Image: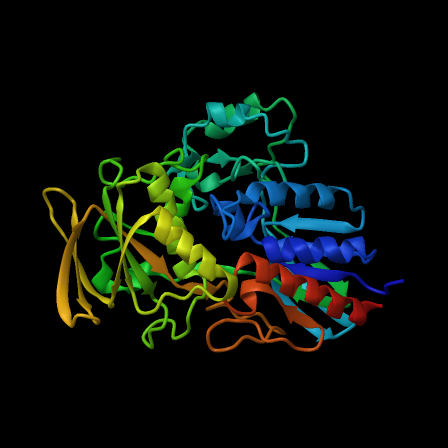
Length: 411
C-alpha cells in the first residue's frame, strides 16, 4: 500500500505519537532518537497541565502500542547527519553512537551495583549523579542500561562485565552509519532550555539557590534527585518563600525575542507543587504578562485559589546573595505602583525560555529559521516544539496532522 517508509526524527511525545499513528495506518516507520531513551521532555516532568496527570501513564500506553507494531523500527543514540533527495525519494544518513550495552540486557541492575565511577545526570539537569553504567530513568524505553566509558573508575569495566550474567556489555561496540531511503520525514526534535548562564543579572551558576524551572520539575518528581521534595540546593531545606522570574530569556531582543508559550503555566504548576508540599509557602511571581491562553485560564484560577501567590508586574533587574544564609535578594520595579521592590527569598526559580533543539545545528537538507525552528518543505514536516513553542496537547495535534501529510507522500 505504501511505497517507502516514513522517517520520524525525535522520540519525544510528538515523535512517539507520529510514529505510532503512522505505523497503525500500516506504513513502515523508522524512528530515530538522539538520547538513549524515548520520552523526551515529557518524561522529565512530574505532572503536565491542566489536569496535573503524571506523564508516565500516557507514555506507558504508547510504549505498549509501539511494542505491538512489527512495522516500526526504533534507533536510539542516533543523529541525522544529512538529508538529500525530494518528497517521496529521500535519502537520509544517520549516525548511531555506541551504547556499549547490547539487546541481551534485562536491566537487572547488577552491573550498577559494582560500578564505582560516577557522572552527572543530564536527565536530572545535573542535580544528582548516576553510576557510569546507568538506566536513564525507571520507565526508560528501551529498558536497557547505557555505559559512559569516560566516567569509569579504575577496574570498573572488569567488575561490570563479571557482574553481568547475560553477556550484555560490549566495550568494543563501534559507531555505525546507516542510510535510509524514505518517502517522508516528520521532524520532532523538540526543545531545550535556553542557556541560563547567559542571563548574567540573574545569578544562575553563581548562586546555589537559583535554579531553573526544569530543575524544579525534576526535584518534584517521585523518582527525582530529591525524592519528590522541592528543596534549596544549598542546604536541603524546604523553602518558605520562593521567587519566580518569568520570561527568563524569552521576549528579550538580546536572547529569545519570542514568547515561549508554556513558561507562565509551568510556574503556576510549580506554585501548586509548593503549596502541596507546604500550604504556607509564599510564591512571588515577577512577570511581564501572565499568559494562559484559552482553556488554561481555568488553571490560573485554580493556582490563585490553592497556592499562596503574590503577582508582581515587573522585570527582575538583579539578584544578589546573602553569603551567610544563602538567601537571595531580588530587585525589580513594580510597574503598577512605579516603585522599586526588593524581596528576600529562600530560593529563585527561573522560568527559562524554550529554545528549539535544532538551534545552532546545521543539517544539510533541513531548513531552519533564524531561531532554530524547522521550516516545512515538501515531504519534511516539523511537529511539536521543532515547529514552534507548544504545549503537550497541541504538540500531539501537530503530530497527528503531520502523519496525514506524510502518508500522502508515500502512498
